[in-house]
Image 1 (spheres, one colour):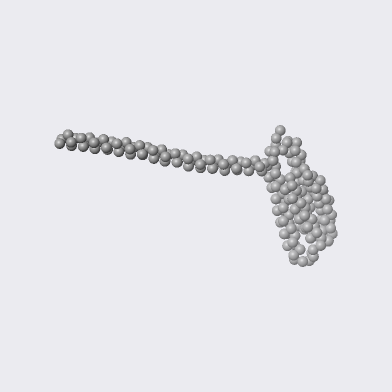
Image 2 (cartoon, helix red, strand yellow; image 1 turned 135 degrees about the vertical axis):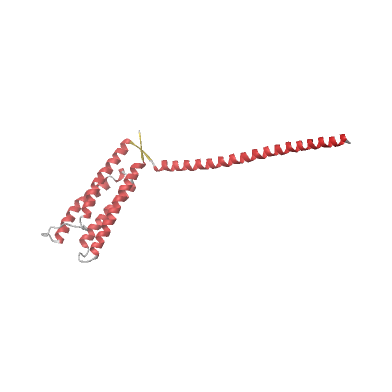
Length: 203
């Protein structure tokens, strides 16, 4: 009877030991599966982040333009010449109908306007010729902005000459034109800066 009881106890211990081995093995297997899943999830997240970074870098490269130093120097020289001319042109355009003015009392308003339009004419011709003659040698986006400035300034000269000077809207129109011209010149400046920044000079 004792041996039967002892055998049963031994069997019980062996059975518990077997279960422990099975549970331990199962836990190790499940733990390994869980770790592998975490690793795969992290690998996927890292790969996705890497792909996004690569796309962003490629987009930056696509926006960049590789040119030789000779090409860059020629284009940069054009921008310098055009900008210098544009500053003078802007000043002449804004002087046609300045919001604050110092006048010669010996001059009539008609004479003053005529003189300022005569000063504007050569500046207009100089910038227009410079922009058009160099058009193939600099960025088309910059050309578009320059053309907008030229059109606005020409429009201001026409408005000043042909609008009714006794009308209250005459000076409101002058103010609106002035703001549009200044904004267009600033946009041109930013476009030139963006172009220069995008260029990568090679050998």
